Image 1 (tube, rainbow, N blue to C red):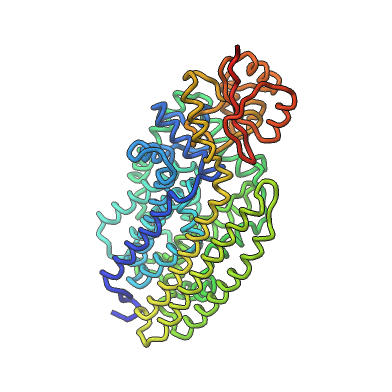
Image 2 (image 1 turned 30 degrees about the vertical axis):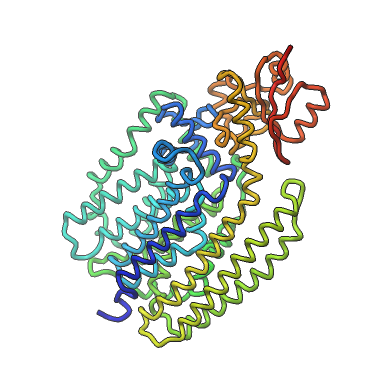
Amino acid sequence: MNETLSRPLSRAAILLLIVALAVIWFVPLGWRHLLPSDEGRYAEMAREMLATGDWITPRYNAYKYFEKPPLQTWANALTFMWFGIGEWQARLYTALTGFAGVLLIGYTGTRVFNAATGFFAALVLATAPYWNLMGHFNTLDMALSFWMELTLCALLLAQRPGLPRGQVRLWMWVCWAAMGLAVLSKGLVGLILPGAVLVLYTFIARDWALWKRLYLVSGLIVFFAIVSPWFILVQQRNPEFFNFFFIVQQFRRYLTPEQNRPGPLWYFVPVILVGFLPWLSVSVQSLRHALSTPRQPNGFAPVTLMLVWSVFIFVFFSVSHSKLLSYTLPIAPPLALLIGMYLPLMTREQWRRHLAGYMFLCLALAIGSFYLTRLGDARNPNVLYREFQVWVFAAAAVGFVVTAIGLWLNRSPRTPATGAASPAVALGTAWLLLATIAGTGHDVFGTVSSGAPLAPAVRAAIAKLPPDTPFYSVGVLDHTLPFYVGHTMTMVAVTDELKFGIDEEPQKWIPTIDEWKQRWKASRYALALLPAQRYDELAAQGLPMQVVARDARRVVVERPPQP
């Protein structure tokens, strides 16, 4: 076997690296408070699902919520059932899919290409800030990206030349099952994107024979066996589901700007550039090397498929009217695999320049962190930025030191694949630690935005009141406090993203502040969450309120006892 094809490290060393990655990956899950809106929303939906026992109709703040399918809500609810309700539990499913994605790309690279490619692809994906940061937030896009990655990887594994027919069929069933789970994660994109990529690849590569190896009939049976039960059950119980989920959320969300998530055509360019920073300087060489890779003996071109996958998904979301940073995350695994194909070929001199450049980048980040001490406003005062600056400086310092160690390790003579492992692992570790430290430090903002410090006082107040005491959310939808206090809230005067659920059950909300004030005055017991400015206005009007807890953004009050 050629040196560039051999395993760059021993099995024991690779296992040790996996264990070390698992520690860095999973231990910090509970070190930060949940952030609005996604983290709080999906954690609260799972808490309500577990509390109500309704595993078919998702609800958010007790209102029907059909924006997304329930796979992640199911997973989070099961995690709460097994391990209790908390922050690390809310992020566990997301972290598991991110970690599994690293192992999967390593396995796929080893089987489809060679052991060195698999090792370096896993290293690139694990240490790319885009992947490892998104793997530590309770959002849907990480799990969606994993199931789409499994779709792609299973297809690549199924098309290896000389594979027995039974194994081809098994891998294709895994591919179809993964597409079904992607649909249950976030909707039709789990099917539309891989399907469009396959059609485009067929025309670009002129690989018509591939369709004979897809096991379309049995694969579709597997796909619909996974997808159909929930869609049928939820439609039976909620006749309004089909129009809102498919027409409003799946098509109008993409084709119109009504979600108010605009962005220029180049929106995702800086996302990818920053998201792959430690490997950005070898991206052009990696692409050039990948394009020179020949087809497999059976005519299948895995590199072409990965390039079509990456370009199409990037363009698909770039032209959308609704954009979020995490939307292009499904292209991270194939990009990591393409970079992983090139890294074992780098010379010692190339690694020297590469590492030296990132040492200077870490130094610039450490110096630039002092600019944070000049920022601040009423919502996020300067003291928070000063605290965060210390974390960013520490993260950059650690990155600088570990990269310097990689530069020192690069001095020793070596063979291409095995010698590249040491500086690559050092650089990857530097950026993994950098992202972990800076991400943990961001909790100085997360603590305030989550409202978690208010929760003990609010829970104590709830415990003293009758179980049917109303809890109003006046003029605002707080995405995190319901989870921390373990209680849903009745919306007042605003619908926000709960408009569909409120329209379906209008008796569960109060449309005006005046109507709420009348109910408040007439109630013997009641709680309310108000923005700080709204509280000041109502207090000036003499509305009877007794503060339970407050911070700079929100105030929780209760109805004072009546004589």
